[in-house]
Length: 194
Image (cartoon, rainbow, N blue to C red; front, top):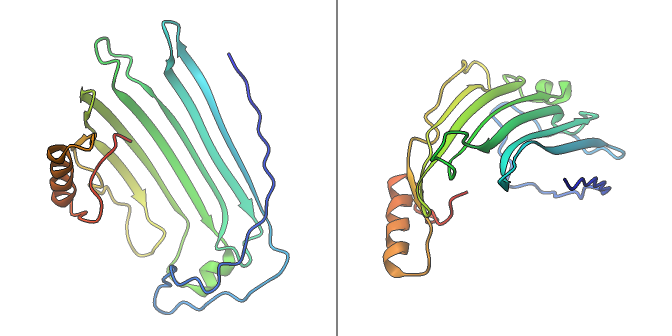
């Protein structure tokens, strides 16, 4: 089995003015600050590999980060997921997964935007392959949103749906556009099985 370790170093660039960020009413803008820092760590590890097909198996995915929280809005975050191929005989094209996340906002962020709190959630999905180009993906989420006083919720984020691969033929593109419109997303057609 191939093992790889990758280390990346970099820096952040100021994106001011950040017109893509909408602050809740009553929030104030954080002051600029030099010398801010963030540490990030990601891991992907195959836990099980199918001896007959090395592309099939079960993987562990972890992302975590920790920062100074001033002026960064996020103090820390952690997400952990198990994803892999279905172990059910005859369902080799299916995928399944479960993931959890936890986001801790900085004290500075909470003081600038009253009503914000740490957020956490869990997600469970099963992506059933109907044909090589069509999948049905039920998805269950339980979320504790970061905006108080919203209670823990179970949103119907992605109801079971069929997604079709487009091959450039006008019939497939029209079907994909119709699918996107039915989901309330008329901006882009569903064109991948990801």
